[in-house]
Image 1 (tube, rainbow, N blue to C red):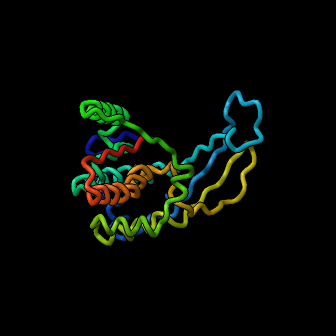
Image 2: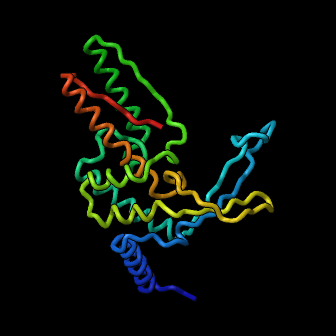
Image 3: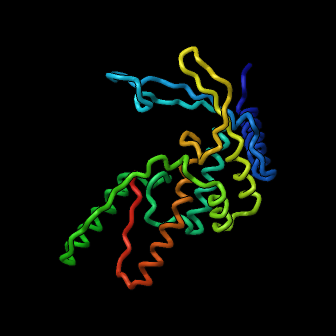
Amino acid sequence: MEISQENCWEYIDKLIDIANACINLGHWPSHFKTSTTIIIPKPNKTSYDSTKSFCPIVLLNTTGKLFEKMIGEQLQFLLISNNFIHTYQLDRLKYRSTTDTGMALTYFIWLGWVKTLSTSMLAFNIVQFFPSLNHQLLSLILNKAKFDQKVSTFFSNYLVNRKTKYLWNNFSPPLCNIDVGIGQELALSPILSTLYLSLIFHILENHLKILKKSYFYSLVCW
């Protein structure tokens, strides 16, 4: 079967209609929430008696992942347009990269030298950050960002009743619930995690202003 350019655009329009319907109805279909997690041993390990010796690969419905990317693009555009995402949040956003982080850090160091100051940097990693995100708090943050109520309703449905089936060699147990936080493999996880951290940056900046600090420099670098 050959798909002409005209038919291709018709399919695209239908996909957009379905994605919009998911938002308007506040519903994420169950088959988009079901995944298969394949457990792959990491190569050249001396022992495989620890979970760190294995790499899980999560397989999701391709159409659902496409919809997530479409929604994520719009979500990021709206969040940055209304300045809800803090200026110094540089990770997991389009057109902001590790290079931007390095350039900003270099600028802060040089600025400190000009003022005969020393610059210190604190770097840390939040273990199990994605599974730790609270669904209720995320919904409150979406409301704080002044999204339409249907967007908050959509994400309230999007985050729950997720299931996965583990696959390890020929071993495959039944589906199990994974209603904790947000999955790191989800296409919407980057923008949702950035949104989750945004209030911390704004609150910290306001506190520093109250303390009459001259500068506020904060970077997120994973």
